Length: 284
Image (cartoon, rainbow, N blue to C red):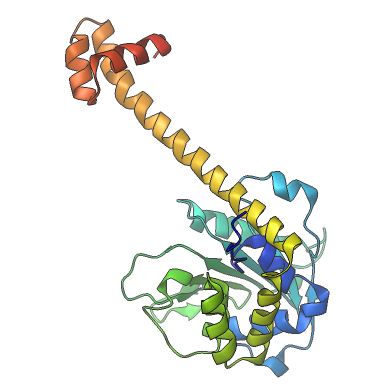
């Protein structure tokens, strides 16, 4: 591990060490309050529903932070994700629906379903709209006047890469900038300039992590694991593209339609490389 390695808060295991610990419940309450713009005194009780990280968590591909909270009578799920995926919107809806229905017991009335809010903090851009800022609330509306269909559904998307483009000087920006920090210098700037006391306290915890060798090793290993998984996925995609590109020309060669030389030229490789590929993939 590089001596200059910086422990990032956006890393799932680090985020959970800060906001998933019962001893830091005041910080978690403040985070939820500011991100959802709920007054502090309007939140009477916050309970962390999944404090521990299950052993199988580490074996999952692209594991996502899953911090489930009970905020008064609402279910709030905070998710930190650093890698984009094409089906993220559908997966987010699916996950919200599971949270929404999981507490309803057989025979209970639907009115007992709790208000369920998903908070998605993303290190990639989900929305391409140039005029969309870093915070996009997603709700269900109906009719020409776009009336709210229900108070029990909400998904809040926070895109970290849009923070600098759309500053609004809101309290939530202290938290998002802290989550987005990637160097000790940036962290010290945030600690010294934070307007939210709890955000400053969370920053000090992250600063302490930089000197904790066990946490540094855990974070480094987790980040390496995620990079390795990303490389494996990219390699698999590239192999798929190569197989499709080479396979089409190989089929034409085997059918006698074009020569190996012509196929190699179209594929952009040497004749030897193309022949080697055909020998290694006789059934393609």
